[in-house]
Length: 85
Image 1: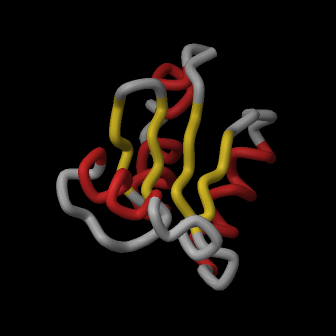
Image 2 (image 1 turned 120 degrees about the vertical axis):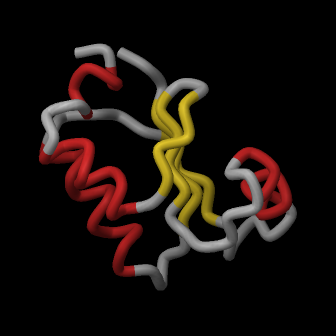
Image 3 (image 1 turned 180 degrees about the vertical axis):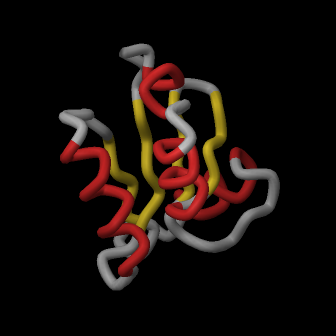
């Protein structure tokens, strides 16, 4: 399975929703809290091609985008393949 990383904030409802979907699928992920680690926000901006909002989700080297994009991949039946399942 591909490694999954989520740049998030504890105050973000979309972050919680994205993590909930991944947990429901049994996917382990690493979380980077940009509120607690503000220096990591510039890393997120670079990796996400300037996207400033959280969550920013990465599966392996693929930038998925945010919560809406993650759910859209799942609805289209493409998330499991991206995860390497």
